Length: 206
Ligand code: TYD
Image 1 (cartoon, rainbow, N blue to C red):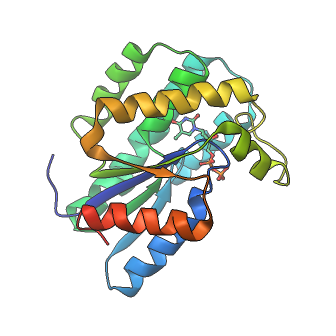
Image 2 (cartoon, rainbow, N blue to C red; image 1 turned 30 degrees about the horizontal axis):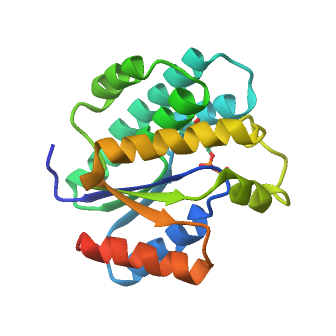
């Protein structure tokens, strides 16, 4: 599905530090005069934000979790992402379907064949133009999260869970390497920022 806009997603395990870098890109692209839509998943619409709150805080099994994140994604695509891309906006989305393969598939062990079916149903051919994956060892990410607020249902998981999430992200990247830029996120913020800049420049998005 081609459209005049650009669809860029940001992924990584909890504590990878992506938000700081997405903030910086948002500011830079706004300053350069682009029509920028900054959004997130699960969430991005009033309905999807309600579903986010359920997924992050209410006990449920892995299938329910997967169905709710895809329900939120459907609403988000229809209400926000597709219209923005159609008018030529640059959409910066904090997490998207790779997170479902990583967390529900890798972390929870839910069937990835079912996830692929849901992906096709919900998205048709829509995929990000670029996915920036912040990769780092879970032990480093966990140390960064120690001082953070009250953990949600994912942040409260153990290191083995995040090892599986990380592996599932890297498996998605290996299957679709053209779409991904992998950032070594266990470096200084300056070094991470320069890797992000180089990855975007390589795609003509700097
Ligand atoms: P996150 O994006 O880290 O937001 P914050 O920075 O506010 O904590 O939190 C979203 C959580 O939702 C994260 O732990 C990953 C999880 N998640 C899934 O399990 N599946 C999904 O499909 C998506 C998009 C997110």
